Image 1 (tube, chains in turn cyan, green):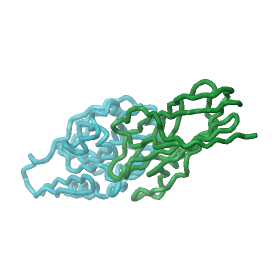
Image 2: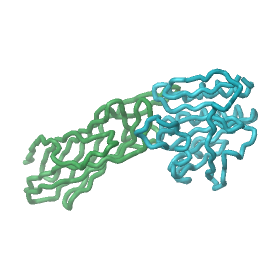
Image 3: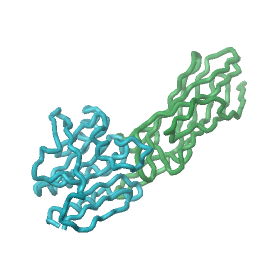
Length: 178
Length: 153
């Protein structure tokens, strides 16, 4: 049974079980440099689930979630899961100092210098008054090995899931083949 | 003999309101004594929003900062931000230090003027806001206020 859950503003919408996966949304392709200047693309991790957090150094929710992302990477990296942070509109030096040096991530931190990649993930019609990259700040995504988005949560301050419990619930189901 | 004049002045001049201003200048109080001008600036923060404190507990966060463009003879001596409040994010032990729904900032200017002065000065408040749904990019808000000194310093 394949299900896709979107968690938007604290509400979850589950699609009915279906073997036909055409209703799943394909994640947009991206290629970004990491902090060492190496090019990383969304297709560099064949066969793996991608957990992506879209962040900024100044974002309090992103900072609160950071230790839990690192822990998730440690817990799941040997289970076919790759964690990535996409940092929006900040320099490598700033991100190195404020995020990497502080939290010692053991996964790649990618630099979305113009916000275009973050914007490409933004759902249509959500918070239309905001720029698309701003909509995605502090969001979390789970992408399966076929490139389908299995989970997306936009920041909901009232129901902030710093410990990534909702994402891990969906991830565990995916890894179990449910 | 110190001369203290308290003048209540509503904001008389301001730059066009930007569409996404989450903080707006409301009014100010001004006092004067030889060599100094005291200002008490009042800002309104949009309903449901808060901004980071001038002294955030986390170095990564963007503090609220007030700056001025001042004419010759005036310079900032001291800026004192109001006491912040604390909010705690779900799943976190360390609170956030924030301001909202209002912000009051006390400013003391050194005034090296012997003559009567009237003019408009520009202030800029840099802040980073969040509401119950989102956190927003840091942004700056510019405002103007009339400043009048009676000289004789």
